[in-house]
Image 1 (tube, rainbow, N blue to C red):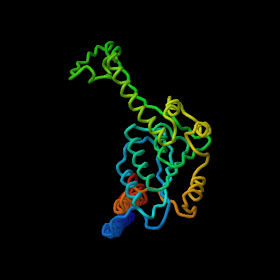
Image 2 (image 1 turned 60 degrees about the vertical axis):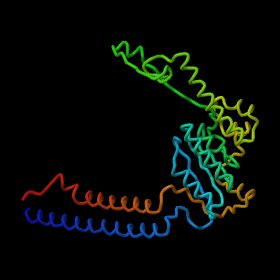
Image 3 (image 1 turned 45 degrees about the vertical axis):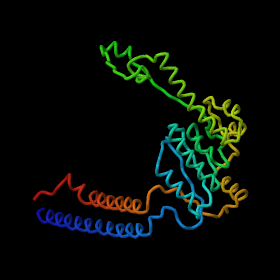
Image 4 (image 1 turned 90 degrees about the vertical axis):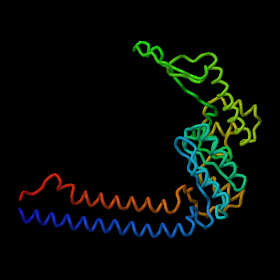
Length: 304
């Protein structure tokens, strides 16, 4: 038993040394590559001609790295066009506005096509508006042109619990809406003015993006959602299809060859990508060594 335990201990020490040197070697290689990439300027986008794809998914907020990547891509001669791949239920008004503005600036220089997936609603639809062509699936849920502000107040519940909040404000509207007291008529009017102004901004984006009369855009902007087929009939999208139809349109209307490769927008620099990859490799190596050698025997050890 003692001999087996000694052999096991020696094996562990050997494997740990090998793992350490392996991890150091991986970090060294990636460190050299990162330095070389930094010396070359850390280019994010490849130099060969290609079509750029921007995935827009999940909840939309302002992302400065995406905006910066779009600004850089607009100046990159290798980028021939942009496909916006949208699958998002919406997001913040400011986030949608920032993305819309960045895409509008890009569209002033190069062709842009928006391709809607399962959902492209609210700020997700807003992101599609700067595109020269919007393509949706028949079953895409889109539209939801409007602004939503939700709140609640629990004054009665707090009163039953014997909780009496003390509120000090610099003005009567500072705490409107409030969790601790009902919305006043003055506060409601102020909130409605904010909502109406934000809604008017959204409607203006729709009218401009879809070349639509403001009255028509306003009639569609009551918050309802549309299927892709309904949106096509209403003039909110241009065609039914997916990315193949987007590539075909770019080739036919904007002379962007269908054979060009498509590359996703990369918001991380070369050095950051290499460092992340190196870290993942090292952690995977360490974890596999621990799982393969140390972990099973940490529960049971042979007696000496």
